[in-house]
Amino acid sequence: MSGRHLYFLAVGALVGCATSGRYPEHQATPASKSSVLTDVEIGNANADLNSAYDAIARLRPGWLAARGVTSFGGSGSGTEFAVVYVDGQRYGDLSSLRNIQAFQVGSMQYYDVTQAGAMFGIRGGSSGVIEIKLKGPRT
Image (cartoon, rainbow, N blue to C red; front, side):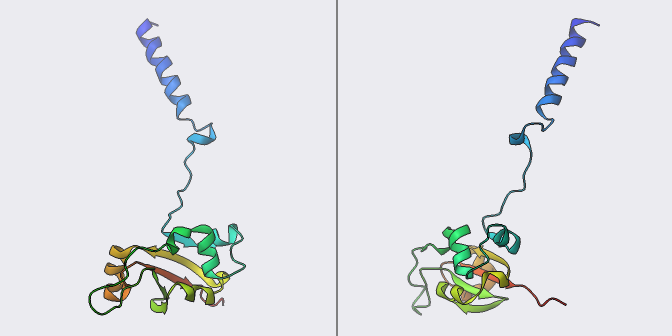
């Protein structure tokens, strides 16, 4: 074998070891979407014992932050905080999340103001939307 062949063999072996995934930091892990919160994640974090508000405060506190918009047009319909939708219907403001038990939640998703406008139109408010999909009845 020539020196050139040994060089390519050594480079190939190094590349193979580097991509073998034998070190945990090189293994691909599913990335958690910060805009989605599932019932599995809520349950795994033991955050399903209280309200949906408490689960969000623990696992996605940024969803509860003020966005700085206090008025929208002349109608006064603007809000500084995200509004809540449950199963496609407007439910209320952030405090209404305290009326929903976390174990009833199938998933929650946060939409920023642009996404909320695309999904909900003007009804989406001026500071984003937290959409909750409840678990269906078990049969």
